[in-house]
Amino acid sequence: MNINGVGQAQGQDCTTQIVQWWYQVPFFTKLVFAICTFTFLIDTLGGGIFYAYLVDQPLKVIGSLQVWRLLFSEFVCSNFLNLLMGILVFYFIASRLELTLGSTVFTFDFLLQGILNQIIYNLLTFIVSFAYKNVLQLPNEGLWSICLVYITIQAYSNPEVDVQLMCFPILIKNKYYPIALIAFIALMSRQIIQPVTCVLQGYLIQRFFNGLLFRPSQATITKLENGILGGVKTRSDFKSNQIILVQTNFTPPQTQSSSTPQFRGRGVKIGSEIENPSTMNNMAQANAKVEHMEIEDDIDTEANQGEQAQDGMNQEGQQKKKKNYNQFGDEIV
Image 1 (tube, one colour):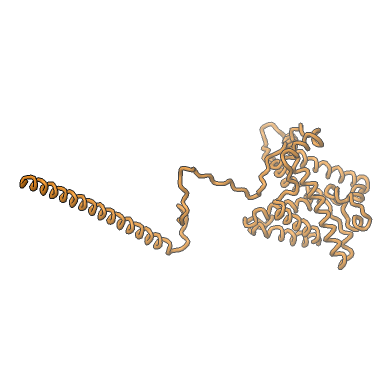
Image 2 (cartoon, rainbow, N blue to C red):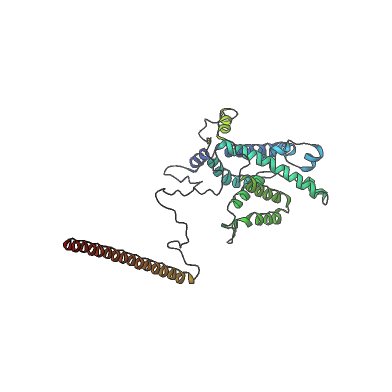
């Protein structure tokens, strides 16, 4: 058995490996697992008390102003399959993000993303209710919504990359992946407002907030960890504040030595393919022209040197003639 890179060591049974894997799960991801499992077990044994009072149902949020449902709907599920699939997908997404961003940033980003998701869902449902009043009774529950938001953010951060469409042997552009998910979810569950809400939110977050709704300063992170999160920051699974790259597609700038002049002309990359067949001829003509210009410069230089030498000889001859003339005049005198 192998769970997230935890291999089967000699003498270790399955239970030991699961315990080791559990210790490797980051703190907030683990906390979400525990809360969702706890609420589902209580609902199963107690007649759905958490689901009845916490799930986001626009008819109750808008009609009865039960706004607390916007805060907790991600943590309740109506059936075991929804819970299991939501936790599995959330694990693969959340654990990586929490390790990258740190537990503090990911915790607050998750909570804000969840609230925003429920607000957008209620607004879209309210608009659609003018044509179909029954949509106000459709709940937005579980971890599927927040997972789809993060999947959309990731897709639009690298829109031109080819990815496999779920389990199908098909490659599509990343920017079309969320749209394919909308079609798939609508076909399987006949629910379209929820996936449209998540894809719209993910696109807006990536477009205007560069993938993160909660982007605090380093001082704010430290203040939160020393304050409200002070009781858990000492845990081994709590990932402390990380340095966050503001740009998702960040490319470090290329530095160049000041002693080396920068080439600003046009050229061909070494080892690259020449896209235009006439490029080689153009390069050959350009090289021949440069060589011709260099030869002409050499000829002009030699000609100038010859003229200078001839002038020097002429001046020397005139000086000799003048000297002989003076000597001849002295002899006459």
